[in-house]
Image (cartoon, rainbow, N blue to C red; front, side, top):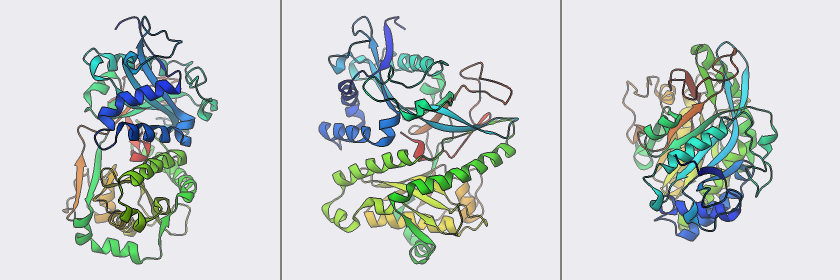
Length: 424
């Protein structure tokens, strides 16, 4: 590693724009033009979630590009990434208490073609890791000089973990300390499944208990989910008493950030006929099964008109009485919404246990009973792999971990609520 290489926050919106330009060939082309891609990134940057929690990072050669001076072109940026600071929860072995911590979700790690093959991405992540694990590090005006201090920086929660979603397999980030966790999802081919499980769609369409969620209700849904997640963490800790239990709670601002992304694709890719027929997407941001309690089963989703999918952000499918009816109805609602919008698939992360709820036979993501036609369980090995680095205490008697990589993923760390709402 060259001693002159340094990672620092972007010093201006122009530098953020430079990083967007670098990423375009991989994450914008060919479906978006360069201007459309930049428009999308700038649109999302002004959403509340990014407005409060986003930081753009660049790797530069300090001998060429002084750290206090903005780069004059994107060519001076050797590698780049983004982070979103947010809240997470942990329960430690030996303690019944739920602990709130800060994490940084890393996204958009990118090295442009001329700078590849030189280890710049690894160097940037290693240097960023050093910053994040420093006890003194907080997101502040010093790390975002072009913006206000985000609200989370004012909360005295310790920064003790980082997550990312690898699109290059598990090994690269595992070597740097972000170990992969379960990457399994349910994929529903809408046309086929509607024919094979017609009763689910009919239940969703006919029952007065099925209510569509308007985007204006998201904060209420979040509060309901948070209360349930607290008890789930306690139950999980009872079943695996020697593990650290980790979860990223549902957050209203991040859900709206996802929905704004959906709206951008809706306006770009949906036909005029579809937009006239479907109307406002925010009128159906999900569905819930009304059982008259503070913990109604529900599903939140985002519409992806670019890749013709309805992506489930959060799915709480269990009824208090153990009934399978809510799961079937909510899956039926998701299929109906996808069909209404002309989307080909429904995708739900963290699959497996739901099929026990639906069929009574689910175990280890491989139901004994054959899944209905059009529904499959997919194990991801290359893309969107949830990866976690945790350096907080390993038990109630510790203050912090001695080593960056001192756990075996899936054994010492249990990641609950591992769904797409936490993806950035």
